[in-house]
Length: 376
Image 1 (cartoon, one colour):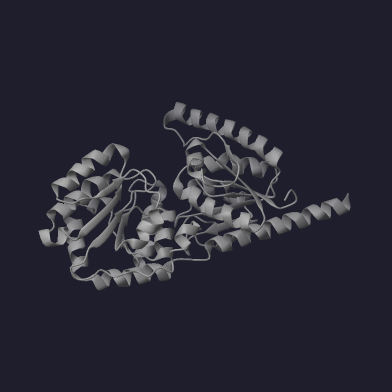
Image 2 (image 1 turned 60 degrees about the horizontal axis):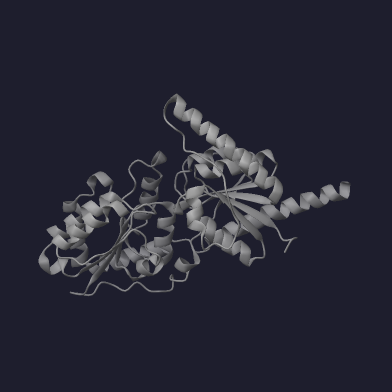
């Protein structure tokens, strides 16, 4: 194994960045590669089940004001030195970046050391970290057919690979969507990303309280909430007469998603990929203050394909949600058609496609090394 290709993955500190990196790591390990992950302290908590060494580097989002920006630059500078130290010891054949500011120190250090870089972006708008490093990449891999913010880079190949999802989601693609039966229970999964979303804890219980009794009694809710919102959400559901399954974190999200008739969630790149790989209809409420509106662009792409409904957060009110749910329960075939459209839109070969990109870059690196050895 010591002669096997070695790839370092650099990812931001949220599940949306770490989960695609995890999927690629497992695929590369299965191909006989050696793999390591570099992230910040937040990302390290997502990697407990990943059988690769994890290296933490310092990083910081851009602060506000002069002093905030200076502190951010200083933090990033320390991260670059840490990453450079790790990379010189590890001597990887390539570094794959998955976006997020914690990926920047590792990718910048790799570029300075002459290590080939591959960038992957989960969103329909290229993230700021990837835009900053685009000119240094060998391959820019996208998740959507159309991605804003990508410009021609002199040494980069642009490839639409799709967004890798974890094997647990891929395994459930074969599980058919079970349509909503007349007078049967309607299973709704509510998620707010890795950090939860307060707006869902406020709006969803109120929306259900507005619905007629005979419809409300049919709804079965499982919801991920922020820890600080759990008690208030539980009380709101109890007041509406609904016994909801609430938690700050679900470990069985793939199974819960597959069993759902409808998912209400944000529109991060990983969430969209998971929904469309399994093929489940969703109401997407994009994060309103995301950088460059990438979640809005993600949701628009799936909604235009007929695989979801987009509701901007400012329009996501108890009244509007209650009306939407009542209409879906009255016409359950709409849910089935939307599930089929979501599944058709999903890109199932994403992790293989991205791993093939890595293999191509590593192969060229080996060829270049062999030429250097012969010349010496």
